[in-house]
Length: 494
Image 1 (cartoon, rainbow, N blue to C red):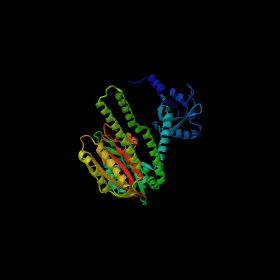
Image 2: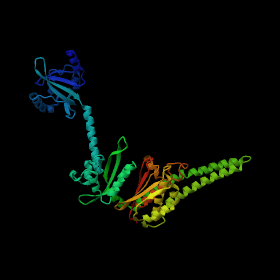
Image 3: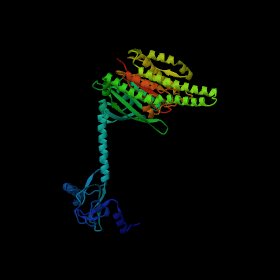
Image 4: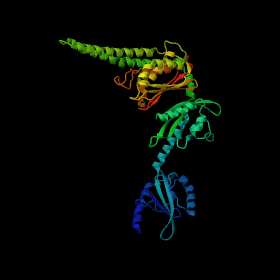
């Protein structure tokens, strides 16, 4: 069905894009409403003007050349937002535009030029903002010595960002972009640890977070932190891992050069803050309970005939509250004394762990628990405190086990130059990462006393012991998927 001229005219006028028709001499013949509005003109003002009037003055000579070239060799030109063309308004302001060109003929066969114009000011603004943010992100990645990578398991392909190549000091031709190629770059003493850590993160569905060593082509030693998270398909299988790598060599060096006095002073200040909080909050709870029970007991004694059973009941409540208060105070004092009594000595961690396991033999047998560990290293440190560190972490694995599932605890270690990195892994109920800031604070328990017995002081002791050995402690976990505690210990603590 043929369309009449009225329909064409309506389409011309109603188009959201500006439409300008000019002759081959650049004289404007016809414009639609969107066109003269875009350039700030009134209806009819553009007809008869030159197309050059819509070009910024400093670009008109250049535009004349391109216009003549188009007339000489006309070909349809599609609209593209990437050209970033500039239009010139009646008020001398500029507008970002994109133009599509085509040659048309009138009824007399005379050739004319059809220009469809779209304003892209907002698109250009957002593009510039995006480019600015992208540049800032690239600069931030460079300043932080941070690069990102992807590992696609299906085709065994690793993709590195340019920053990763810089961190490894390699050209793209020097890396095979496979998992095997990456493992060959890792320090030979760290390869098995890296491989097992990655597999462990997949098996337990937890984030991948390790530090490994790397020897550069120039022979320098670097410490690199690898972090990653897994992407799963609809069947729950890992299809790829995305992550970052950061050069933490300077951090490791600075850690070795930390002033012990300043470090201990900071720890003491933090302890004082914790003790102040405890004195005003945590220890008040059993004290208030005792006061309340005594008040109730006094009311009973003031009555005509208090039953002996009721008096015994209240006395038992006072006894339990006082015992809890005593336990809290004893734990507080024990934590304060850590590292203050016994001198530094050479500690065989394998022998120490055997003693710890013997002390927990009843709990192991009662829970049908298993524990595995390789021969552990020797280091200089506080023997009693290190035993307490392993004891608390193993006890946690036994205490927070899944109902009906025998606890399995795996202990391992890794050489990190001046430090040993230990891992204590369990298959228990896991920990929600949102509690990471709460977990190592005094008396901050994630479960009520009725759910799981304890004081909430064990991990606080672990943190203090690790810090006394110039290390750090953290964990990776998800609810229901077990927990892996990581901690580093300086090999030689003087």
